[in-house]
Image (cartoon, rainbow, N blue to C red; front, side):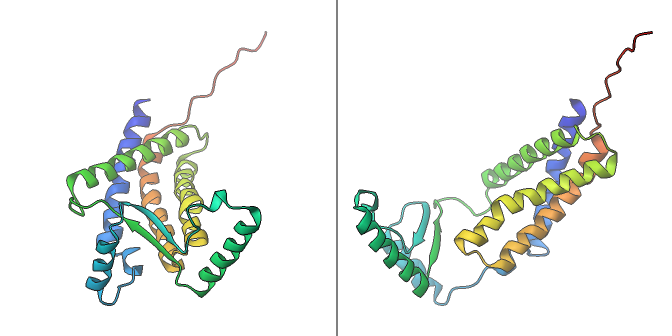
Length: 199
């Protein structure tokens, strides 16, 4: 139990600082974010929209879609698909205002999530009967699994640019590969249960 907790805490620290290096030094992910022309005009447009913090898609079905007849729904789906083809199709995330981009709360919450994930990884690694390499590889695969389960869907469904999503894969491999080294060194597999054989 103590090794699991220590391994998870140290793994979380490694992930946090590896992510810092990925973003601030190598600029993975951030380097793939495009720049808007006339940013002030775009920002003013969103201010006029008075959007509450949330997640928005464009184009989108009407609010009364579920109350429409099946025929009307089909018509609206056809129009929606045509609008999607013509574009632009837009995904918008409106964040709450009033706080700093990298406040202590944001950094602390990120660190907490890293530690929580590393504790789960350490728990799984502690159940691996193999040696150091097997435990390290398990943690690495968990990071890649998370990417395949979540980030890849952002590319498939939400149209996130492929280079951006591949940067996320690179970061997952670096961060959890590094954390895996620490976790694999600290945690130990369970001792085999000795069974008594009849004389």
